[in-house]
Length: 464
Image (cartoon, rainbow, N blue to C red):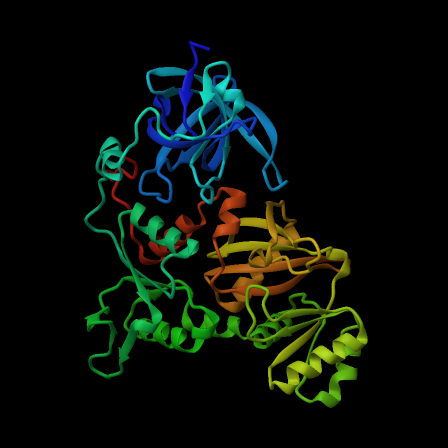
């Protein structure tokens, strides 16, 4: 008892051999294993042994500090999370220091970006060395933000970075924060502009885009439109105006406009011989019966054309229910689609993230119990999936058909083969980055750099 150290439920520790000078850990005696936040994980051979390469962002809520780490792989372990999901993780062994004590601990590598702490210290790592007092925190001292930044030093950034504007509505959304961080990490000047606060000057000789207070935005090198559905018209007009000024848009206005029109996008996919679920569209309530028969009868899906993130999508399990839903939507003068229900998909679909004609990440989304929509925003869960060559080809062709440089392509597996559900011009990053550990935001910035022929200076140090 006397030899044990007493720790709080939260502590700052370090992993000196990895260059992690300070990382805040959650001390959890209820967890068996320990874990550390890691992304871009890959294995390689060194002296006949398997090693793992990965990136660590030790400061919670920030990617300004990026540490490129390598460790010898000691195991692969299936871990069950607190919400019941299982994940196969790589296990490493590194020296951990807590106060003036240090010892070797086994750590699993996983994306903890959405967790409260970048490190979790479980029972196995505590061994016979620790007693936990849950009533206290930081028994070995706390760090201020300035002190942590001082520990990791000053970041060197190139003086010739690009000026990139993110056009969106909410700067606090995960996807928007990640894109801003990814650009800053590469030395670019990143600016968040609320679409509603932008306005345009149309003039043959001096066209301009202004931001609140009269700031002129004509000198941007590129913009990344992340337009919410309710702002599609104005957001696309703004993007189009930037394009007229010679500013590159990562997804141009024409591509966004046609991808947002669900009916038009399905017609484009059909025209290019890309497989989609059998769908119907009508305007008159008198056509309801034939419309239902057109897609194979009930059960069927009814979709509002303006819906997003799974909203405005209804499963009608019987013909009577289908008639009621369709007629109710029509009485509101709402545009809608009916679509065959793919029962064999069992509430699952695929999200393929396509950038510049290549799939950078893929996940399988599974609907919550009692729900048929697999969208993450509707309570669905995401897991890594190996897609088939046919699915890969379908996703890439779909993005190309829409003219999108960046696209989230949703595919459903049916008895007839893979079918395209939807192509999203502003796909979310949270679910796919958390499930795969792939830095999708960085891939988006890479796309801009390639399009503009920008090369990072070799002397730039992107770590601290």
